[in-house]
Length: 248
Image (cartoon, rainbow, N blue to C red; front, side, top):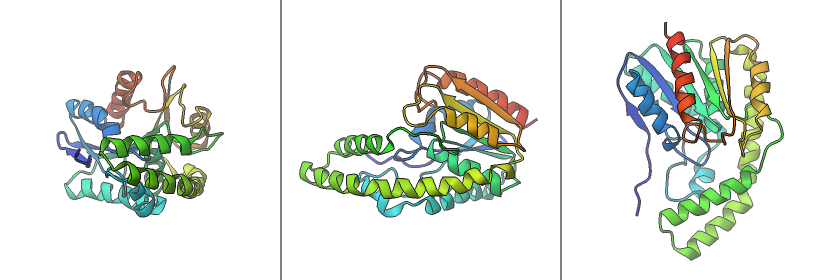
């Protein structure tokens, strides 16, 4: 049986970066980016959202809510502050980007941050339901779950996932409404071949950040997970440039 992935903390330079992962995934989403930033002399922390990273995808629905994940994001900021860091930025991919934005709306001590492929301002979405179910099945197979148990759990997830997706959508409305509260520099990264989030959402997000200096980046032919796909090297370069200016 495989060991579930946990959060990670790479302590290095005097400035800290928090990276928040995507829905139904884990810190592995941002591990390659984190190692890159560590080599650029940043301290990086990537927490695990409640209910994620286990052998059982039903934990995401049974343990997780947007409110609980917001608490996780706040706890991540406190985790880094408790270790003496005061120059802290926060970024998230997909779901994580929603909470990175909310953190910047509510915490003026954060120096900046941003979102990657995140549906903060919602346009027409693609099927998160179907993608979630595919990921759930793959996870059960990876952890060698008994087939009968797996099928039973998949049926339950199929019947119940839309309720949680609705809660996420409702929570995100409030985050979008509060975008003018962000005054720190904000980085937006968006793959133009994103199969989960409508790329137009990124432009609407940019337009909603009326009080922030926005660094906006599109990645042609890149799908949703730009931290690990064909866009990752350009993203790393763009983010490094953003962070260099942020921490000047």
